[in-house]
Length: 440
Image (cartoon, rainbow, N blue to C red; front, top):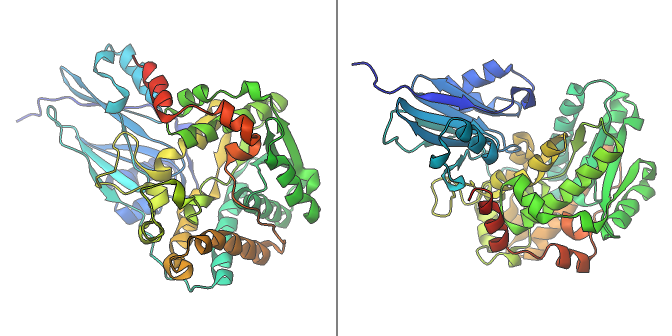
């Protein structure tokens, strides 16, 4: 009997934005369509892929870019709309006369590190199934910060080296730089790799946001100048009155306060660079370094204990995990959800970003660290581990003596504390209301 339904799949993702190093987009899409989990794991790069085989649609993405889908109903059958943005899905549905079916909470986010399998069979459609394609081995490294640092920063250097190799000749390279451990390691490794490759170092800049004399600019100078690298620093000074967290809500399409605040700063930094350099494209950043080395204040989250942090694989990257009680279908979890704070502002201002900390090869090393053994239940020891590991690794890989300053979030370093409290004072309820009002 012939299938009575005619399903449509509308892929609104931008093929030109895919950055796959070892395969064509068609080859990568074929792996998602018919390959094993190991085949998908073998896709090297940044991607958000949609593949169709008959009535089945399979979706997969890397950690560093969002991918969403929405299932609409037409008289002829289901229509699956896929995009990196909620507003793009809504705009398509409006053009098709299907807007009455839309609500942002009905969109679904593809969780990073999974292949999502959807069968378009009509009404009602079955729930998607999920197959993990990235499963790092846990804690096989010895509890030695030197060994760990060399492996971790070595993986970081490998990813940056590959990224540099693929860049167009003579394109300038920026680093979103605060002088913290993550952006500091990215900058120093990029500098070292460029130098080893014989690349023109005048192409490199460390962009530091200063919105009313925040502490990051002084920290950036204190980081670079003792190394003789102060000439690479370029402050991006913006008027604090220009900071608009409600704009950030619209850009990232989310309402979690810390992510909205970070995105507010990212928009200000990107806008400042864009105004100064209209043609600039490529930016490195350190997003993901905190997640990899479990450097978040546990005491700020009543759901967490040091035991839950060190005992749950990929907790900060993926949240509590697919199929768990706390897993949000609309927003996924962890950095899989929150990476929009970086991705969306860069895309909005015309930049192409890259954080090597989001690459599986780097996360794989991080997950191999025996955190439970090395922290031994001591929160302060867990926090100190990151600085020790990364500085040792940078010394071995680059020969440079990297300083390690205390952790400070982007929004707390670009602004003075009193300004941050005043300008970023909206709560989650207000951000959520502003987001939903767009679709009222």
